[in-house]
Length: 378
Image 1 (cartoon, rainbow, N blue to C red):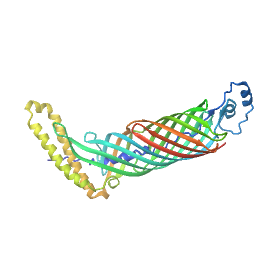
Image 2: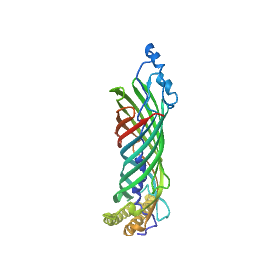
Image 3: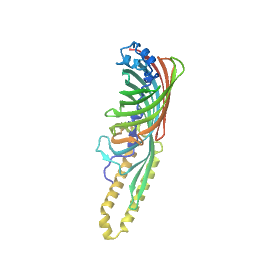
Image 4: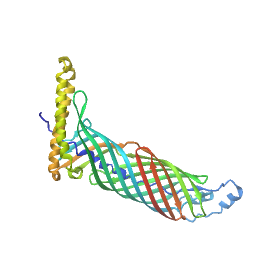
């Protein structure tokens, strides 16, 4: 069987490691302005008018305090740990080998499962610009892994034959930076917050940093234990949007080891030959009129079988000389489900020290966050 020149196709799924957005390092504002009194009562209202707010920030802080709002200290620093696991989907997959031509492989690779895990530490300084607006920065480091289960399929005339299936895993690290804003309002000792943040994650394998946008609406209530301590609980949602286009270059030895792969390649050659025989038998069973109709299908099927055969050869050579091969790629990726549900709580020991935990679940993303925060006035 004559095989046309083609780029190897089996290294690419591990390029999902580009989804370092799963190291999405977002952490929402952890304190809110609570309205704890009813300023419509005349006596209380007169007392509130005497309040002198001691800090420059937030702007209009004194007016908010006189209106009956208890404001958090205006600046803070928090350190947070985040674990996240998420499923993703991939489209428009293109690869090249050793800086060769790029080819679209959507028609031969099928992803059965693609899952990313991230553990990250996040440092987040923040300030209250207005009583209802918190702004913050994000600096984070993450360690992530991506596991991909995929198969290569070729048409055989009556359906498709799976030539080879592989499971791959990659570990990588990244640095994230960004910023966020949280509009919030206090209502009857509770609050509503609409957190939004924008982050960029840098990985050596990426040509450009990966961008992500997170939207996290939350609604909560605060329960006071004393004048200084309280417990806030909330429910909400978590929505992630990442840049869909990703491209870069990776060494083959960073993606795929030869253990077990060479045996699968040998099986792939046999299945490829079976698919070719099935295709030829199907074609020969057609009438002349039917062959004229199905000629384009037959030609595309032969072309796909040729591509996969060349890819098997290239993959085998790459595994035997793994230190000398590189893979160039581009793909479109997205969260399998953009939304998940979350619940959280924060214990305030005093106005300066706070401890937070949050769990996200439902859908195809799970996340756990734990953090400590220190606040001070500006």
